[in-house]
Length: 282
Image (cartoon, rainbow, N blue to C red; front, side):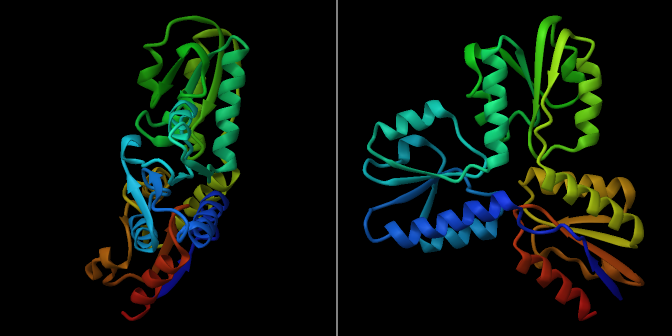
């Protein structure tokens, strides 16, 4: 059986940077403070988060659970500056691992709102990155658009500024922007999709066209991995999204000659290689 891994797979720059900073923080402060926290998962990969938990990073879902005198590692998706201000007031040390591409989207949204634009964020309403971007917009003057049907709920505006969740697909971004053009006289579009995301999506798309079966590896709660699976499925209907090698059903591969594998931005390379090794044994 021929097995090919997509050229752009595994950790992106932002995820690797976040995990490196988390490890450095553990090494530097673990014996000096009582607790090291993240508010929500630092990245969307259950195995990685569980590994960090065993080393001493506690995941909490409410800022109320963060104790004074501790350390908070800001997740790669970014956070609300308002929430961070409240947490700092508890004498908590902040270690920021926000992806630079996400910071760029936050800064663009802030600039647009200060410049008098009604800001539209294209992305998943409940995704932590989008929630963080919203909190950088002044005067609550924004809307979040998940798909084209949401655009009809936006009234006519003099000035519209657009930013996009860094892991969105270019296809979806373009289709939504084309509809937003009908809503304003002056429209400024900031394409904040990260370049690595585009490369990953393109390499997955091209590989899916050349193989019999496509396997996407990564967290089921990871937006960018879910998009990879959707992109692959549009090119190859025999696409499976698994979190790790344990999710493989060997019956998928009976009579198959060529398998493609791609991994999300929060998927460790070792998880991708374990999938490959298991398939090689068939």
